[in-house]
Length: 216
Image (tube, rainbow, N blue to C red; front, side, top):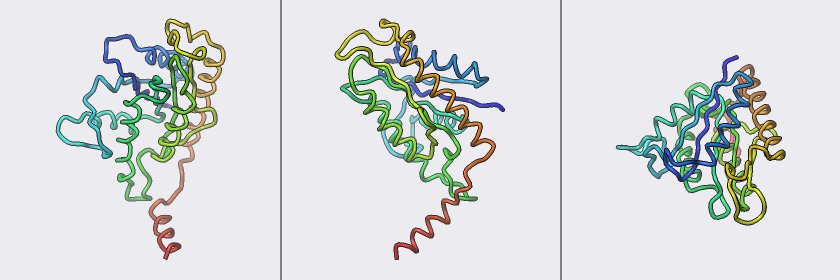
């Protein structure tokens, strides 16, 4: 079964500046490839992505091209550094842009194009905030139609308080982080395969109609 995983790197650093989040992603990519999953990583700040909450904000907006890749993938991993104790502003912005997906239900059953796709989260940094970032992103992914498997996240923050980041601290040798990464990848791949074979039967349009009648 052919599967593809897409990473959205939400670093604030444009290429070719070194990104700890990119180094973190590369280690996860190795595990996906061991499971015969094709991977691609996009550094969002290398593209002109407009602020907004639709799938296309007009002239110069490059989000539609990124969204095409999301729709073509089976799994999406949002990877973000921690800034001021939370996910980066880039991670917040792209989750706002995913609101547009909710207006793109298909004619057959009203499901968003993200139904039957699997979501995951990666967070790195040198200060507290990983669990806060993960919880926010996991909620956004679920609301926007992605399925979240068990242990669908991994993070590295090092010791409490500011200190060396993932590359300098050799986060790739951190057992807890590596264990969570392995769990994330294996569980994401399992769920992606399951949804390929047995997609959601949910009739979104019919349920919306029923909700309206229930609310009269």
